[in-house]
Image 1: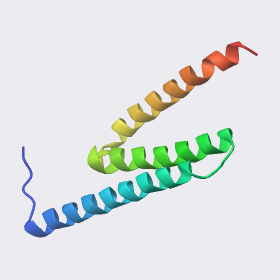
Image 2: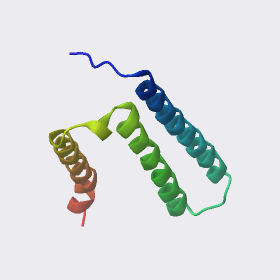
Image 3: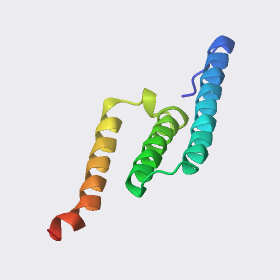
Length: 96
């Protein structure tokens, strides 16, 4: 069933999308700016990952509409994240 939104609701959604887009543009510019700073390799990776996680979270929450999903979707997403983290860390656990 399609949901009909009022004109005010549509304008509010568009406003939110523009804010998220602006935040993504600023974070992209920040990524480029940080690349010119002379951090150690570990610090550069940490900063880049923090910015990437923030950008990915914005995209997932707003553009993929995960912000308004039911809890079961969040549970499945959390399970996928923890499984991915386990697989990512498992090779280092075997080499100790």
